[in-house]
Amino acid sequence: MKISSPVFLSFLVASAHGATYTISDIVAGPKFFDFFEFQTIPDPVHGRVNYVDRTTALKQNLTFAGDANSIVRADFKTVLNPKGPGRNSVRIRSKKTYMTHVAVFDVHHMPQGCGTWPAIREMNVSQWPNGGGLVDMLEGVNDQTPNVVTLHTNEGCTMPASRDQTGISRQNNCNRLINNNAGCGVESPTTKSYGPPFNSNGGGWYIVERASTYIKIFFWPRDSTSVPDDVRNGSISINTDMWGTPIAFFPDTSCNMTQQFSNHNIVIGLSLCGDWAGGLSFGESGCPGNCVDFVNNNPGAFTDAYFDFASIRIYQSRFKRNVIETNS
Ligand SMILES: *[C@@H]1O[C@H](CO)[C@@H](O)[C@H](O)[C@H]1NC(C)=O
Ligand SMILES: *[C@@H]1O[C@H](CO)[C@@H](O)[C@H](O)[C@H]1NC(C)=O
Ligand SMILES: *[C@@H]1O[C@H](CO)[C@@H](O)[C@H](O)[C@H]1NC(C)=O
Ligand SMILES: *[C@@H]1O[C@H](CO)[C@@H](O)[C@H](O)[C@H]1NC(C)=O
Image 1 (tube, rainbow, N blue to C red):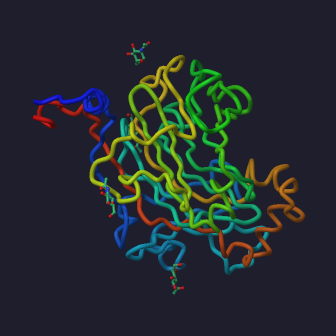
Image 2 (tube, rainbow, N blue to C red):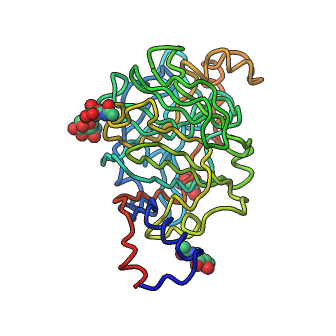
């Protein structure tokens, strides 16, 4: 091994501690939905939705997997009987669970419109809401931008007031049992992170990095000039240490990550109305009348209530690069 300059040496030190991960799952193309199970459960957030199974979703084209686009949507054709079930929609969860990993969501479009409450999150569907932790990576209601990234935990997990992130902290106690389960949220610094501005910009890359001692959320809008090459290229290995400051940083300073977060499923869903979207937020967002009536009577208002994924890529196996092997 030859070390010829201090510059080279600092590169060696950096890469020796690099958070490097290797691809484990590429979720894209016609088999996109094989990665998931369809959750035909009553909506946990009491939305005006009816989560359908895979056969129904396929038949009604609520899910569609092409070569470059995978669509997850709510029905936009049916006027509902007010006494009948809610609007057909989809909630899917990964069959696999993950501990330490990076998940890169390349998203072209997310659901928009009055009454919508889309989410991409990580949680253990067998444990939550009694534990296991919840990471809301992309979530919001009624087109209110920006996105808010939030952790929800059991008692005993708080975040330092000042930390290395570009987003703005709302609350620093992640405990689900206080503040009406608001969790410890961080507002994205850009309006392009959610809803119509996200969509008109062609979406972007949402990324969760779950390490043993921290959770980071990164986001790059489609038109960003600072998207890391390994993200843009969908490289087989990635180094999150080279990505700069995340929008949200949740360190383990006063939160035992091992204790608070179990093995997580990836969950993608679209609710309508319910506890948050159907509450005060509906009128505050300039949406007309009552959310449930709106959903029942206006199928055409949901033509843009869909996710369009280019791909989801999961990386695992954090390892420290072997300096001698790499540079000798
Ligand atoms: C199903 O949805 C896809 C994606 O939105 C669309 O391209 C396709 O035309 C739809 N098929 C039908 C039969 O409506
Ligand atoms: C949730 O966690 C439990 C305990 O670690 C695990 O056995 C189970 O597989 C997880 N649930 C799902 C649905 O994967
Ligand atoms: C990504 O792709 C660009 C353009 O094709 C290439 O120049 C660059 O080396 C690639 N980066 C990585 C990390 O693969
Ligand atoms: C964190 O929790 C795990 C699992 O309960 C425990 O084994 C570990 O000792 C805890 N770490 C600290 C620093 O308290």
